[in-house]
Image 1 (tube, rainbow, N blue to C red):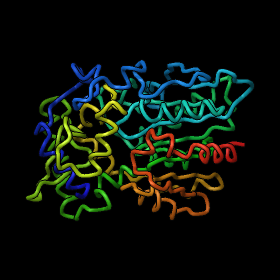
Image 2: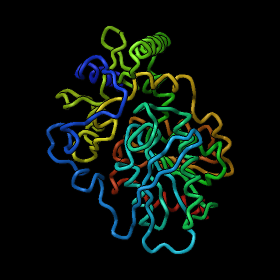
Image 3: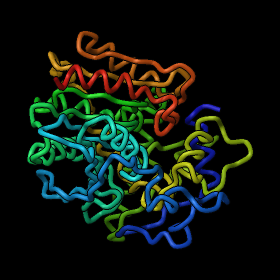
Amino acid sequence: MERRKALGLIAATGAGTAASVTALPSFGSENSRAAGATGKGKATAKGGYTFALDKNVKRTSVRFKNRYGIEVAGDLYVPKNARGKLRALALSGPFGAVKEQSSGLYANEFARRGYVALAFDPSFTGESGGRVRDVGSPDIYTEDFSAAVDFLGLQQVVDRERIGVQAICGLSGMALTAAAADSRIKAVATSAMYDMSRSMSRGHEDSYTREQRQKVVDHLSRQRWVDAEKGTFARGSHEVPFDENGNVAPSNRVLPTTLPADADPITKIFFDYYRTERGYHPRSINSTTAWTATTPMSFFAFRQMTNVDMLAPRRALLVAGAEAHSLYYSQDVQKTAPDSIDLLVVPGADHVDLYDRKDLIPFDKLDEFFTENLA
């Protein structure tokens, strides 16, 4: 089943119309368990994290502000045997995930290899600030990476001339956008890249017709009236699906509460991470709820990576799974700047495998890339 039809399936099996909310939701019974009848989750077993902290790494909870004054929450991973000034990485993603999931796993591994690594929750999500919860913004999320660089560069243990960025899935486009505009970022790598502006405004593999794009715009525009009248912010699909009659069919969940028997392969792989003990976290939007319904508006309005040619002479490395439905995003971006952007395709890996499958994530290659480019 195609992704756009998969999203339609989610809409049909969800709770119907989006519910209005104004604050971080109370997760209730999901707060201490993995949903989907899978029992206790790894996040509970590992102190709120979906992975075990390496014995040679120290993790510290930190806070810093971006240039909009929003407080960003992060975890700073430092090698216990740190000496002198070290190279550093800012990490975030996937879109709708939190620092206790994939980005923290990456930060933990890089710190084990001798980096100072900062995994953070983007503004409005997880433990980060922002009054309206679970809002996605290509501008502010891009700024969050630069704010993370600010923070890292002020640490005594960090060499501010050797700071890079590692992003995962939907935060990858923001990371590349930040690097193009912020020359303090000396190198950038992505894993399982998604271009969220392209995804939301054009659909998977640019499947939206011109008519469908207009229907989505009309739907989002009407939703603003609803939110304005109620004084609240409804939840809704960030990738807006259509039903069998060609009508917009949003859901108030990113993923269904239970996996339908006829679920398509893409829904299955996301469900297997976010809704099971493998990667469930109670603050993760993808695990529990949905974005604010009007989130796609800014992604329709603003493209990402338009100035990616400004990376040169700095370099980027895009890592993608050979079996990933998202591979084309990395392929297309690499083609725009082949002299400064390299593409590494991982055989046998799907999109979500690069979230946490340490047997498939090419950490040796990523380490080699940053070692060379943060010299």
